[in-house]
Amino acid sequence: MKQIKIADKTLCRSDKTFSFKERLEIIRQLEKLKVDVIELPEITNARTDILLVRTASSFVKNSVISVAAGSNEQSIVDAAAALSVANKGRIRIEVPMSAVGMEYFMHKKPEKMNEWVKYAVEKAVSLCPDVEFCAVDATRAEADFLIEVIKTAVASGAKTVSVCDSAAGMMPDDFANFGKKIVEEAGVDVGVGCSNKNGLASAEAIMAVRDGVSVVKTSIGGDGVPFDAFAGMVKDCGDNYGFYAGTSYTEMHRILSQVGWICSDKKMEKNVSVSSVEENGIRLDAKDDINAVSAAVAKLGYDLSDEDNKRVHEEVCRVAEKRSVGAKELDAIIATVALQVPDSYKLENYVINNGNIISASAQITLIRDGKTLQGVAIGDGPIDAAFVAIEQIIGHRYELDDFQIQSITEGKEAVGSALVKLRFDGKLYSGNGISTDIIGASIRAYISAVNKIVYEEHNV
Image: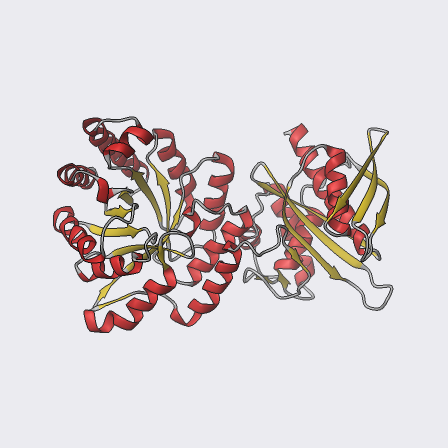
């Protein structure tokens, strides 16, 4: 039986923009789904994108993490830097092969393009042992030239070659024959990517597999080969045709539903969690050393200094003497003990107006350097209005990565705890607030996170 490898391109979708947390969650779910390769787009923001790959590398142990490169030399260097701590890393030299694509995107004629592919693959191989060459519009390329470039890439060290029908211009049987010729010429693993513009992507892919292709690029949603349809075909037809995939079919429906929800337009813009259900599989006890705690911190998306990691470890050990520490407890510990800074902004007072026949509004007064600053805003609910008013005062809108509220004590006078996680310049900052008024707790948590951003921005 031949194993078909699945390379998922969900995070490369051009029709979606994902937050840092959403990208990490999708990667986490794809690892659970046991996809062979998790493909990421080319690095555009060196700080945030490299941090994303390195954070994902802390928990992705079985799947290959593949980062696109090839538009220029710096993209290759950045991809290698991002993959430096990955258990299984791959640089994907992804370039157009059609005459129009080469001219428009790369500003190169065919002979120069062949030279660039040779240089790019050799450069990538010098930095990362696993390199893939991917022709994104292969079916529109001149056939002899495509084969010439593929042979150049393989001779330069590429271990995998992929060809794509980006224009959806071929019928399944023609594409299968096209893929078969590439397999015969390449001498390495060959993958295919197909556009589902005409609804034929799964048929193209499965027929190419039958004719010798060993890797298929899928996507959860978007324009690529639908993951669920292709995985279902492999499961149902594989025994008859001698191939299988390592997909975790028992968890497939749940994971696809979860990732599909993240990719949908129906979810709220801001992620508000009031659930006590454990996330991220984090469970720490008093026996865990600082490396284990630091790994869990990174898994949540934080990039802390050695000193802050030490403080967090000490607090985790103290708390873990009484009970194990999960993701939410770890978040609260980080917000409480890590990156403690002087208050740039102090809360003076706040007034919230809300009801079922009026729009929620907030009037917030803050003190900075002895000056009174006031913001008034309308929002989608009282907490959103309060956050918008604070943003109005500080003159900056930060990405709200997560917002959690929970009760600490019971009864009608219960004390509530709020956790706010803001992302700025690729780094995660969290603030914690406690009050019998959950709106007040949320405001204090937001200001706490803002103070950490302001302090680091002006002192680092």
